[in-house]
Length: 279
Ligand code: RIB
Image (tube, rainbow, N blue to C red; front, side, top):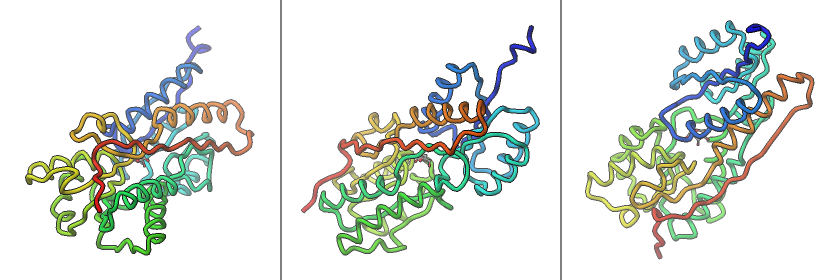
């Protein structure tokens, strides 16, 4: 009968459905969910605290069997309090300091180092960063890794070379003038989406990538291969991250007493055409 066969659900909260990083992440979630007869319910919390609270509440009311929270507007400890109180297994994504819950992660500190090494080895010294406001833990790590390599080169990543904007195409687009005012030879955009917006802003000003400005991205979203020049970036396995996160969560749902689960996935530098070697 229908009740016996009622499907189990996984609630998923992500910060921005328009970012292909999260589309791939969701595809991975669906793949694993399907294999275990679970159905994901997906909400875009749109970087909005109230919306996130609302969706969290709805998911709890609807008795989701577990949650994947990639939307990090809430503090990890708040989420823990809300969900633990309701006895719902969950997995936090992007808050990867291993304080609470299971985790799927990439070594963002190393990712930041890979990006910095590549730019510095290509001869760049005056480098700017484009980051989001209130960066999540994983992105703070990315920045720290980047900074650590600059230090090895006796360079200081000055605060005024770090520009904050929204982590979207529009954010990248809107940051162009601020960025150009710093006269960098290269910029590390903390995600690829921002790089795409930057491309448009630079092109509109008659500037050429990488001749006038080198760009290094992060994520390797599908668009990275379709912009001109193709974007050099650090690849995160977003699909795999979604798949593994779901596997872990389902294991946790099936056995709440499992030991802490931790899976680290690899990063890869994808060298394309957006960084120029200078002497
Ligand atoms: O582009 C989305 C970003 O948000 C990714 O870099 C991912 O790590 C998440 O933090």
